[in-house]
Image (cartoon, rainbow, N blue to C red; front, side, top):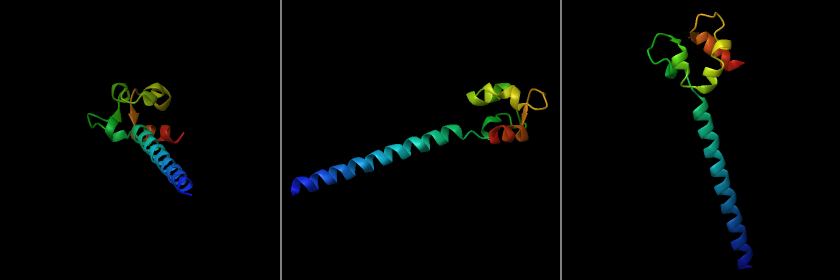
Length: 85
């Protein structure tokens, strides 16, 4: 009987540890993908240059498509529209 209790306790601890590890991974990935316009706009001019966008690989890769007016910069509106699509 004590072996059964020990086994159940070990199983519960394993599940709890696994759930904690999984939560940590999810939170980390959310933090790394949650880049904001303001955090990228290093010079505070309310637009993102290609150089500023380079800090986020996904944004840099889609910069030309996101730059809907073709001026070489992303406005906050263009940045937000890109995130929604």
